[in-house]
Image (cartoon, rainbow, N blue to C red; front, side, top):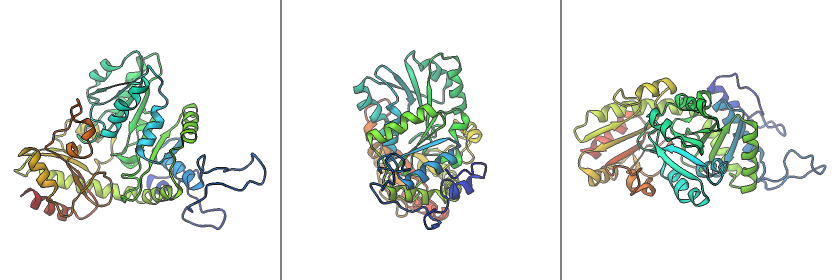
Length: 382
């Protein structure tokens, strides 16, 4: 690995794991578009088969490890593939305790995939430490935290939840989905988490042109198991996808600052709109966990949720009426997106305890000029 961990985030984003290519001096990490590698001697090659390892993937894995302040990184074909690999650490009879506002795909893999293999899952309000403590069971082996959550933007105190393990005699791993915050705004490993996962499709890629997932951790034994699973199961990304995420990461710090500034301005404006019943944004003093967000994040990100007066039909009308905000699933790109989670990204939690208010609209605020975005929302609402 190109070790420069003591440098600042902005420098790491551009250089960590990405020295000039030794073959020809290429400044940008090459796309090693190959499935196999010639070996001078059997068993002595740095790379042998591209499912096992690829130099472009190695660069991405080393870069994200440095950005999260971790020792090891692993890349996958999607965020869900990364989540699946982490869940394979569990065994039948184990219990995972998760946020009661997780992404719909995360809920689906817990309830409709892993419960079929004997892994139990339950959901709790992670912002309530007493509720988390009470929900830990004798067979709990993992606490799964999203913060901020999707789509209600609840904020969990990572350090406080990690301390809840102090009185537990058995191993309990703390896993944090850091997709909404990105490593620029929040570093869960420093707050006591054991494993961090990302859908790199979102802010890390940043341009809505790639699907990718990442895992970051420090423990050598757990890394060895996850690395084995990465190769054995084979849900690995192609080298071009890794290249695109590396390219996106180089501007992550600049983009996250603009996402956050735009979102704060828009959230403040939405608060004063007569057709908006509630605005949910961690940067607003009205947010229930605003003080926690201030303590563990350096800014509040680009995601806003708000509830419109008039119910589901009005939410649909507004979401379909924007011109700059594209009606689309996903998030974290340079362009602004709008969606109604109950009818789009979170249909998998319909008729469950995690069901989303059908009048809630989610915004992924891009890096356009904030005044233009506000003008677009104004015409859609009015």
